[in-house]
Image (cartoon, rainbow, N blue to C red; front, side, top):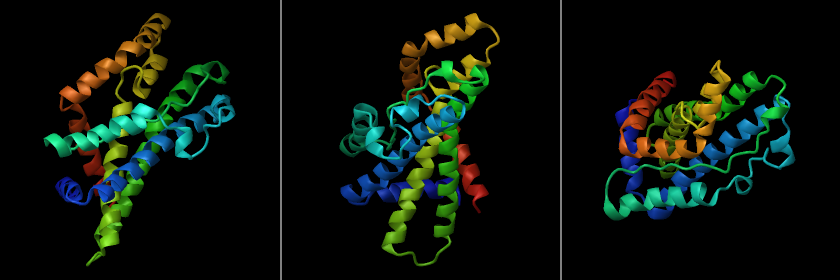
Length: 231
């Protein structure tokens, strides 16, 4: 399946009823952000830090990970605004970060990298699974309405998980890629400087994401490659 076919399916999805369209987007987004955070906590636990476990965050229950703005308000606005004012749809969101205590890691630098990569890694696995399921479903002739609805949901899952993986791997604090960069820097001063930019970093990241074509340029080849793998 080519990327243009996925884009066409997303356009068809936008023509569905509001409730059906909302469900098609909300379910994959919740699964993506919850699995992202649980993966961070699970790998941290394997590395010696049980903070997330003691906080009750090693669960797939979405309410334990819900962030009022990132999980509800932001995705809702991104879904509604294109319907009101036109323009391309762009759905994005995040969950409440799981608590991590790096001082508990057995090998701090190595474990910090592993924990940071766990979230995007979970999203890449979900994207790959979505691509294979979508390819298998697309091969069926005369798909029923339920199968077409499932195909639309898998398309959103593929897109959202690729988006979250690529976004979080950008080497900017406070994203996971920024934490990997800080852990890899050989000089403590440079590492501390990167970590000190976390408060300002998210503003920079959002300005770059919403004002440049960077994310689509990175996400599109990844989606195309995953769909090619799933053939």
